Image (cartoon, rainbow over all chains, first blue to last red; front, side, top):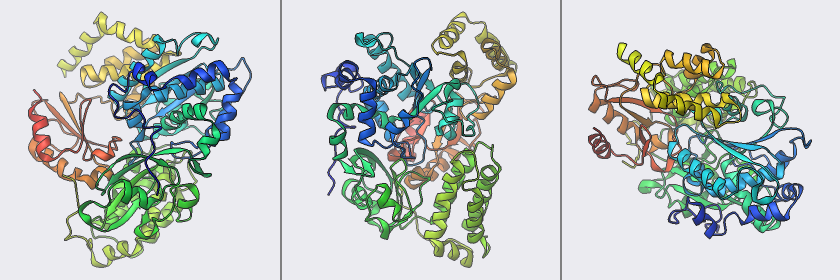
Length: 431
Length: 165
């Protein structure tokens, strides 16, 4: 049974945890000093590569490998970006880190800056997190005062800055190139790739972007080494990972666990089991864009192999739990509404397709569905997926497709009876 | 209308505000990054981003007013019409829905007599639904201007609103 870990969450709950002195009193910034004083940039990069740290924003791309794509020529400007635009429904782990342990994230950013010899980092935080932006700005100021940022950091000859940039309410800006456009004061519309950010990113300079939690892992990899890191979790999902559990559980919250913990353990051991002592009906394992699981599919590890074996993925590790009072069509309508609203409108399959999915799902939910509707939904999903500039279209089509496939009978029943089979059941809520 | 126009002119004539903008522009490696940050300043002070400010900031940053308008209208947090003194943002996304956000929203609608997108006649409250606030373990979530409230029951909402002047 996987027990709770305390690395990424070590300082959560510690009094005055956001202050640099508290952080340093608990061993903070020692890994950064080790990197700057005792390791060449290439050695840091190789250690992170060897750890096989997977990106925690959702795509799971190996972070060290991504860093190695940056051009190495001295004369090139290299920028880092920290993606703190956390807005995937069900995902709230980065907020925990930003608001409780900003220096852990910042230390990871500085070490990454050293490894990639970057000029600085744009910390792009959601507009709806003003408190987090204030906390992080304060942490940045404290780091400048300590000489951990700015010119000639701790006598190493390395110059590095961090700029805090607020978003303004657009889920699409979590997509890396949309985020970069937003940093440049533009509409958050994703760019066609190639060119990739490593060669042409923010302001046309070589850029590397990682998620908040990804950066938070770096100090531990430098402190304890890649072998220690890989001893936690599985080969496909090494290291400690933050799982955010929401919905119908007794103890919703963020749990730090090995990357190969099973879905069942997350829900029943750590999050306290199902709210209202009802039956589990469905789980979205990795944020709203990952395919939904039925209750008989939860005895798998939350790593790529485990969730892959039941047709899903760990995404951003946002686990959304639904008990048997939830109508699956209604849940699908809610998700489709989100993606319809957040589509930037550049690509026709996404802009039009998300609307069509929402219309069809709404008509089924309201009892006006037609017999061919489930198949029509699947066909629209086919016409969205892999036909757009960015993955937002896929992020809508994947969960919607999975709801229809996993709970087809419930969709058919709505259409047959002309109403929701759960119409007499009151959905469990916490208020 | 004349009031909002007057407020915009007054703000743009305020040397303190001009300094804030200059400081913002100087704090980034390239000035364009300051655009969205400056729009936030304006939205917070005037409760909207009027055309006067759009023209001003476009000129200050060397952009076309059309570009600035494109940005203002792209991002949810900027509005071209004034919002109420308090913006009530109810998260309606799946985890909050599972926690009871529909009840919370219905309660606020009937209490204030407005629908999402509306503003009370006295200009005190605007009500909107928002997408995921990354507070999924504290649903239903309600954000009032910059303050996030977690696990908000209808009674909590009544108390929160009664404490706003």
